[in-house]
Image 1: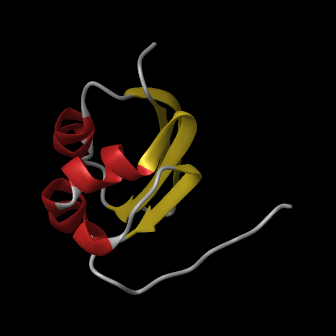
Image 2: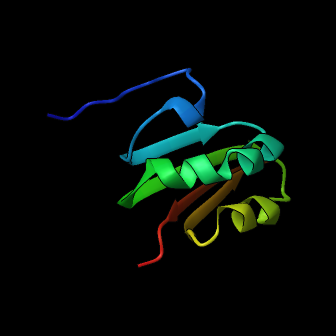
Image 3: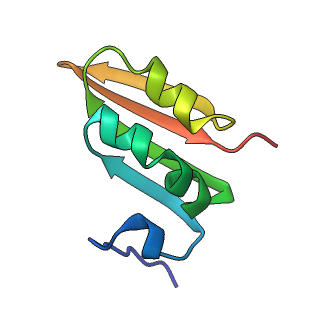
Amino acid sequence: IDQIEVDMAELATISGPYDVVVANILAPVLVSMALDLRRLTAADGVLIIRHFGNDHQHVIDALAPMQVEHTTIDAGWASIQLTHVH
């Protein structure tokens, strides 16, 4: 059964993993949440992050060893799709 689950709980309290994880939040918060975002993304899943600003390399570095699959920048917003390295 296909499901979408939305939760406002602290990431550390959420168990996973999930096939798709989406985080639309400021870059410094993404960096601070990197460990949990990696943990919650299934081995064959995808993490999609979105933040404002052109400087996103530090966010990608924090999510390593996940790898970037696709990046889109539109009106100052960066959307980045990452997967686990296999």
